[in-house]
Image 1 (cartoon, rainbow, N blue to C red):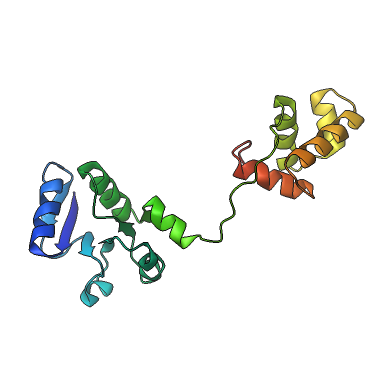
Image 2 (image 1 turned 120 degrees about the vertical axis):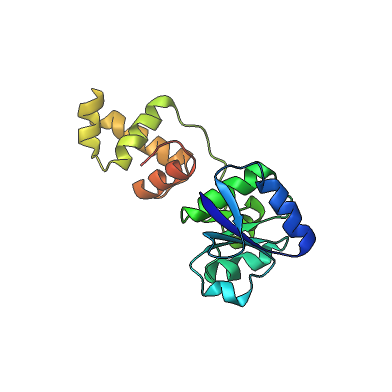
Length: 181
């Protein structure tokens, strides 16, 4: 059972309580909570509590400051009951929960993955072995092809992914979801 305290105005409190009423794993309490749901900015007293804090805010710019202050979740006010329960469970488990809009505000310098030419299934196989740190000679032996053919595949992969090094090619492949490491 997750104990939840709602530190919000009357109307907001009533709305959150009604969202949580149908969840058997959540109990709304007035103190000693595992998770505290606050409007905009949590009360200063919550900073000293061990409860995970969820903040309902429509201001994505406030997210970075809140996370540095120890807030576990930044969520918009328009949530479904399922989203609220999932956020409470995640925060109680020590996870951080962010709305995609807040994530974009926190990572403005994130560069989108460049459009690249598609890799063939054989090139993806070679890229996976490159990610394992295997040499061209070993890749050739595993695949039953010549080392020259492996070099051709590596050069093609690097060209298609616009990578200057094998490491950069692997990192781009990981970011694009072509391989898992």
